Image (cartoon, rainbow, N blue to C red):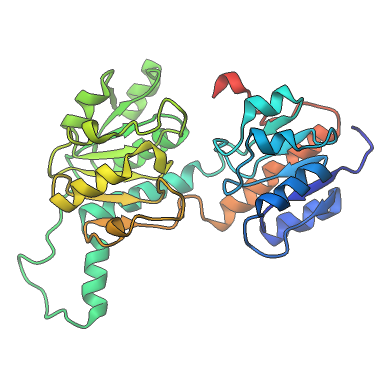
Length: 328
């Protein structure tokens, strides 16, 4: 579509600098308030636009794609994960899908380490005590957590983020172990000083800390199910900065309440922002509102990737971050 100023609909508020640049380049319709579009608004958007820019809060399913006009040719997702989009159906309709991979790797790995430290050293409990006015002073036996050095960290999913977590973990003296769909090349394993486990069950049973860093796909839904969670040591903790659906949240909550798992650090939840009240009430769970990628730098870089994908497509070329269904 070279030479044509494309009609672009953006479903959520983006950083000002990103919206300004989009307005300069495209015929763009921006979101006025920072709330998700309703189903009706999304139907209107796909009927109206050459390009849709959704985020993870938008379900772009087969039914919605079926309502799209012939004009819609690209869904340029603002985010790396595309489990909110029926990519296969989109491609069958001749609609390309792009995403923003790699941008939030470092930010999410930082948050993973923050949660590991927060859970093992009981940081939120200490904050609540200090802020309550009830702290009576230092004691040799008060607020005892665990030392990171020497502990075993099991990383579930050794892609970009998993490897970034491994590098940080090594600096804290953690022993790095991992399970992945495919084993890493020997030189990468050696550089990360990481031990591969073909059996997830065996790895889970022997780790002090489990970090979830794999995407949500049909094969990873409830990968950490009740049976597998019960393999964890009672003094082990679990951290998730990937997707909530990878863990059976109800089973994990029951085990945390019963002391069968020592703690959890969660930035994502199985039902999005609807967090289980029983989980919210637990003192041994740190819960964050999906902050893993929430840095100013990261959000702007995501927007820049979206713009590059759209501009490249508008110039008649393949978007650099094209999502291929077979690779999911």
